[in-house]
Length: 166
Ligand SMILES: O=P(O)(O)OC[C@H]1O[C@H](OP(=O)(O)OP(=O)(O)O)[C@H](O)[C@@H]1O
Ligand code: HPA
Ligand SMILES: [Mg+2]
Image (tube, rainbow, N blue to C red; front, side, top):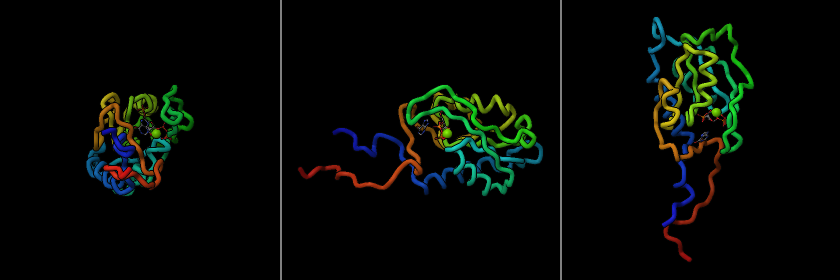
């Protein structure tokens, strides 16, 4: 039987995202340089903002900034561009900074971000094999041919029963 629409991707609920982002925070806790603390979180907008908020909350980090890299138009990839940089007085070379994104796919977004803050620790909630080398920490890996659907891109809707009634 053909796959049902909701079997064609990895669909992440808000609850799942919250659990996975918390797990990421707990993994990072105490692993900052020197005393183990992290001095700031930089979210890669827009997808990194929800996980970054959860990580900053768990680890009690009050300095939160953003970097904006645009790399996709819907599901089509284009040349990544930095549209907005974080406060470089705050982040410096990235030492003690946690860069957070929802996922790494090809790794091209993170390549651009790492060039800005070479000493930062890069963490994503989800990772695909091609980009895994660009992240220092992640929670769940999915195969390269899986599309991850996030809760902010979805809506609840009716699906046909597995065994149709004709
Ligand atoms: O590893 P890559 O192949 O570069 O892809 C991963 C990036 O792509 C998506 O962001 P997108 O650029 O679509 O912007 P958004 O976060 O605003 O949705 C995703 O949130 C990651 O940031
Ligand atoms: O699998 C994905 N899901 C959502 N956004 C993405 N951007 C790159 N890959 C993905
Ligand atoms: Mg993104």
